[in-house]
Length: 130
Image 1 (cartoon, rainbow, N blue to C red):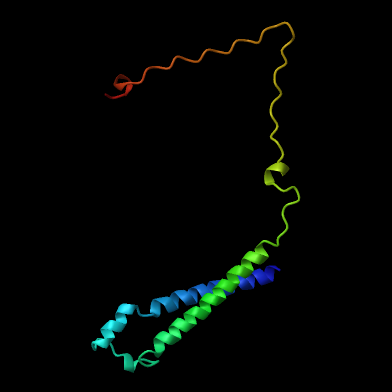
Image 2 (cartoon, one colour):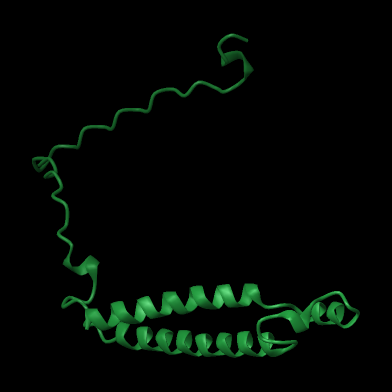
């Protein structure tokens, strides 16, 4: 199963890189208007005046389909994995050992908590060097 997931991931990455390259090579709608006024050499291209656009757009569509199929396959096979037996990572965690509380004999009072130290007032007078 891991081999299939690895193959699907590799094909998906290659399809994504191919789509990026093909999309960047395609001309926008504005490029066609410029070629109509003599701005481009469309007839001297490898695929003819409009053959390149059809080839690139069809190849992009095929790679988009391959990318979609790989994405659906990865989602399907990714959800087939079995869950952890306990269901949660937190349920299987071992609680930390806490120190035992002091035993206070019956009939005695607990020692008073130490009063917090006096907090000096904040102000410009306490900033050193000023």
